Length: 119
Image (tube, rainbow, N blue to C red):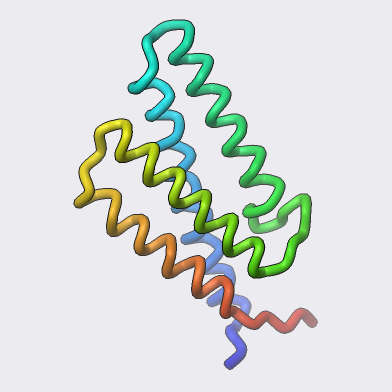
């Protein structure tokens, strides 16, 4: 079953929002788990920059490096898992993190199975 362009754009929008939540969680982990001011700020900025570079290279709606859809899905799962681990380590509750992680996994699956016919 081919998905329409509107469905694919909705999946991409949800995926981008979940990736933004993961980047915020990684930044919060850097600020909350390391002593401030110097190591904490440096780790937070470095981790956020690394996450944004990985997102821009592979996971953005218009990625710089185009990969196979399976590699993209795997990187999306790893990105979401790292964001969830950072949120849990920063002190977030399982009741908040688990539904977001399950939603990210479902969106990754939907993105993987989406068949888009470019015209």
